[in-house]
Length: 221
Image (tube, rainbow, N blue to C red; front, side):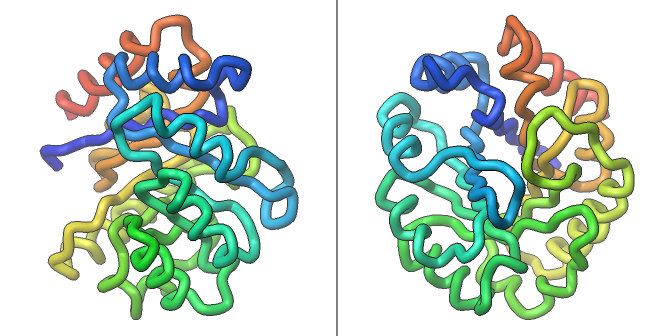
């Protein structure tokens, strides 16, 4: 991979000054803002909705990557598109009609993707590769920030990289959960090109130093 993208997750940001936080992390070198949406139904936590996405949109020019950990998903997709999302991903278990939901995201003007939990099989990909712009692999079980990376995810990353390469399509391969300076290169070596990091960046005093260290490790692998 020659192009790597770092996507700080605002789940770990200071919500009392969220506009400042996203501006600072982009100034520090972030490529994407990762936006975690949880509903206390599909996952055991409750976070943020379209109004917060709309509020931060004027503060950054980089893409906003909305990860929907909610069920059902279709009702809220147009709201996030209108709020300024550029990428919308969802879990296949949260949709009754996966192909239709992917098409809804694209019809709303956003890039579309599927998210796979650590134990979710990849067979959902078999018939929808033509509608995917991104595949997100969770390297923790979704619901909370600050968890440790699940090493088994590396095999899954490699398997998805083979599927993407075989498809001949330009599909981003994102990994989310426990990504830090010391393991980002291993995820890249397995085939990931986009890396979500929450507490590893927002939990540190110098965002630029962390992002620079991540890029140095990516360049060296």
